Length: 386
Ligand SMILES: NC(=O)c1ccc[n+]([C@@H]2O[C@H](COP(=O)([O-])OP(=O)(O)OC[C@H]3O[C@@H](n4cnc5c(N)ncnc54)[C@H](O)[C@@H]3O)[C@@H](O)[C@H]2O)c1
Image 1: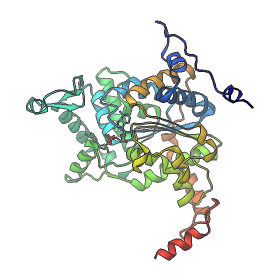
Image 2 (image 1 turned 90 degrees about the vertical axis):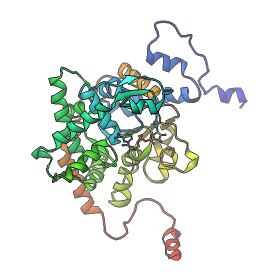
Image 3 (image 1 turned 180 degrees about the vertical axis):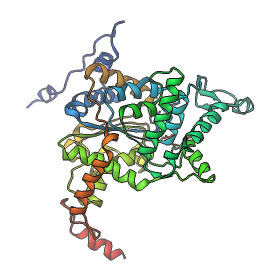
Image 4 (image 1 turned 90 degrees about the horizontal axis):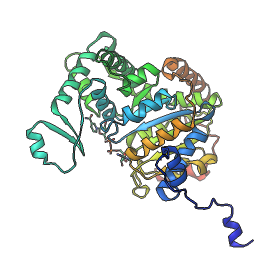
């Protein structure tokens, strides 16, 4: 067979000229043809053609300063309302800064080239080119402290329950202020979308919760519940014949938390499973440092986090989320019909119980019997080292 014939199976690079009426979805489809533009087009197609159809479960992880830049209101809320996000793992920072929008506290477009010593003197906070007054922090902190002193917060709970309860109060305050669709936490409460945070102490929300503990608050975060509850969501997807997909913005600890659900099911609970079906990540992190943020879906396959059979469909787009997310949101909303909300928060007890029953039947305290093929020498090698 000639070389030309071999290339005939590849789509020809034949872009359309951009015209003044082109939609964002068509722009991505017809002009993002190569390099990271090409990956963004593949990401849009993966979402629209594989992840979202047939009621597939979509878990989204959020890192980087997305909500301060307004991406909660512009993109995350429309995606959540359309039923395109079923559960979320976020940094506490994204949820804390989301509160400013829910409380109608102003953030401003500034510049990254300002005198930070002067900003400090003037009581102005800077996140790259986003600016806001120090009072925004003080008012948000006070809101968190006042809300969590209520009786319903006086016990240990998973972060999904904590965010649901906090979201209820943000939702009520937003309504009083006449705001519509302003906060991710409030929208998650209204839509029954569970939001977890992988390191609950590591944000201004966690800082206020800790300070209130010194005043006698009994609110504690049940991280074991979070680990099992997130695994329960993935098990619910897989055991009911649905696809489980991860849509990762950035990297960091939320990336691992959303992915580790599969090793929790397979390696720790001893329940046979193959890994998440689809993996989509937008990041600036490189794979060659060995860090998790830049780890590729192929590396995740080796851990059992991603199904090896669907690896060719997985996409990593090396692009700033502030560019990728609005484009992917526009593509999804214009190409896919809104889906029924799964309201996974409402069935949290039921799905946790389901995975618990399976685990208690299948799992062991001693080394599990895995269905995965492993080298016979592996266990003796580890014994040798001891
Ligand atoms: N006031 C607060 O509460 C506050 C503020 C900032 C950070 N924090 C905490 O600090 C920790 C670090 O959070 P973080 O999310 O800022 O970590 P980070 O900035 O290190 O980002 C995590 C990962 O996402 C990638 N990333 C970041 N921004 C990106 C973008 N725009 N596009 C593509 N990829 C991007 C990074 O390369 C990295 O791999 C978190 O635990 C957070 O809660 C708290």
